[in-house]
Amino acid sequence: MTASHGNDNGDGQLLYPGKEAVLPSVRLANIHDGIEDYEAFAVLEELTNQLKPAEHSDLIAANRQLLAMPDEVTRSLTEYTKAPHVLLRARRRLDHQIVSTKRALTQ
Image 1: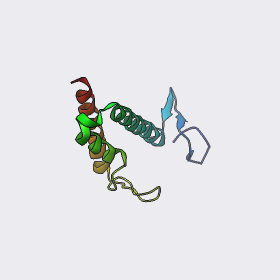
Image 2: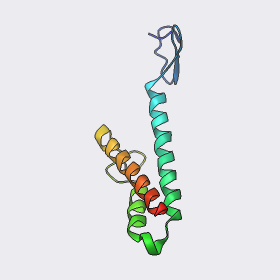
Image 3: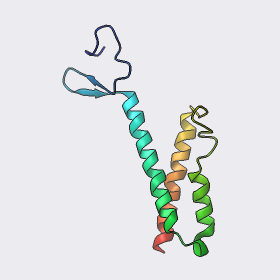
Image 4: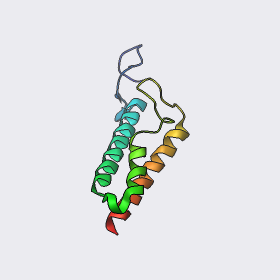
């Protein structure tokens, strides 16, 4: 038990006081993951905007489709997957598209 609020569990806390150090919450780890996901989408969008449509139309289309957020991940603010494998697969696809786009830009 944390030393935060007596009998309360500290619901809503991002950090918890520990005996020797501050302890991060699972909520904070999830926020961190969300920020990284947002940054990855921003990187892919920026890279996609640098592609030349005449040379990379297929890659641009694939990137735009991924940037639209697949329905298997989320359909709305209230409809989204809770399956970790779906999120991990989407992150791998996003990472792959970033690498592919960087390669296309350096060729």
